[in-house]
Amino acid sequence: MSLAVDVFQVGPGGAAQVLDVPPGCSDLAGFERWRTTVWGSDAARSLGARFLPVLAEGDLYVWPGQVGEFLDECALLRAGLDALVPGLAGADPGRAPAEHRRRISARLANIEAAARRALREDGGVLVW
Image (cartoon, rainbow, N blue to C red; front, side, top):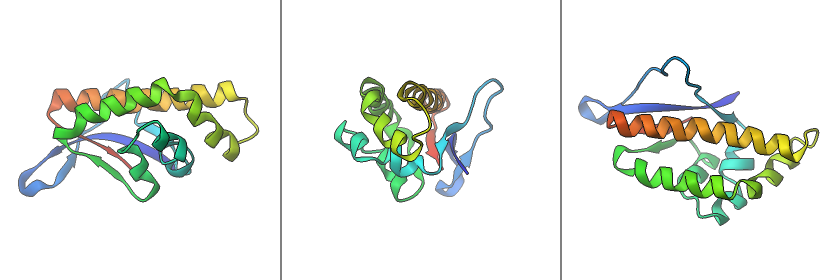
């Protein structure tokens, strides 16, 4: 199974209504095991992440008023990307560290793109 990242808007009654992924965009946010090995890892927490580590326990809803802070967190993780590689390398030792770094960077780019779309749509971000 894979984690997906989507944009949602808050509908009537406060329910989240997931928007379609635009053509040319990817909703891939990593594999299910990334909940603990990457996004919810001790390394992510040590970099200052507080949103993405929620994935270690369940799905992540970043509400519309939090998206700017969430993008700041994504920037922290991007700056500390090398710290996230060992968690993934331990779960998948058959790949070179550079490949792990590339894969994490690509999935983080998808998350960042969804967050920027959420800002434009007055929406939030769901990683599930």
